[in-house]
Length: 138
Image (tube, one colour):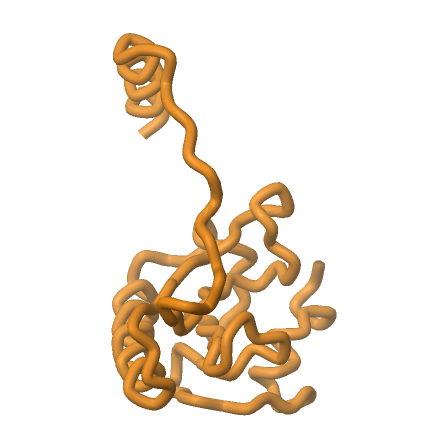
């Protein structure tokens, strides 16, 4: 996908409106149009990067700072007692818009949302073998 076809690039360029929360020279935060809970916000780098693996490391501090600033404001405004910050990378992980973005979702004790189910390794040896393989790719 070219940046010309990217919905988030169009938002950054003012071609599509959004309900903006925060903006600086590197990052934009705006309300998700299909919120999981009220206050659900998206944080994106203004420059187009497909996912976390494409973002230069020097952009990370601006993204994290924005997550902290906006996240605190979401908690204070909504009265939420928790906040999920997550990102989907690649289609099999649920990424639908291929412009890097983080979801900040305010959470409440009675919101009914659950985490995905957890599994277990068959043995510590299996886990150690997997860890060794991962380390070899670093």
